[in-house]
Length: 115
Length: 113
Image (cartoon, rainbow over all chains, first blue to last red):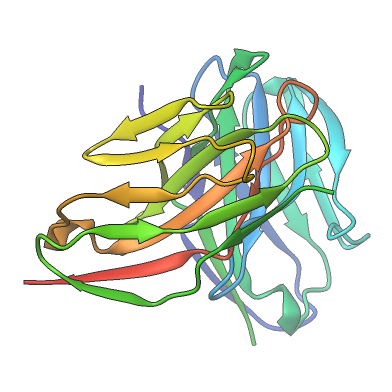
């Protein structure tokens, strides 16, 4: 079990550019989540997948954000036309479980800085 | 909607002191409750959890009891070490209906030798 991995760990971009982040969940975890964490705050939910289906999106996820999970394995989060307000840590988590017994395991995050 | 309120930090303690971090929640259903910890330079790790009223989660000397009557899940440790310095997050999810986690703002704890 290698844990949840994310790539890149750090990204600096200029306003208006597009960026894409990748998340590799723990193998056999069917649920995958994206969160955003700004300085001094707790993570905020963005979206989640069950296998390849995107089942829920937060109102935080504007039209500039899109997430995919082809084949139900890794996931990508793309931000188009980045803005300075997009600067944050983007966290990915995965889980497997049923009912009450559900634990999310988090990756190290991708820190985005938009100049 | 669901929300979590945590004691504001930062908290600074001496080694072997008693630590309490207060956490209260608001939920529409019957949530599962979690404490996650983020050590400097590392990702979020699950510290402990509880899924029903009066359950006590425990790990690494930390404990928290699910109190439905007071909608609380306070984190405690009897004798902290320097290695406990981290940011602690209280969180909930409305399992099994809603899998996403709602987090508190986090409490930064610094333990001095």
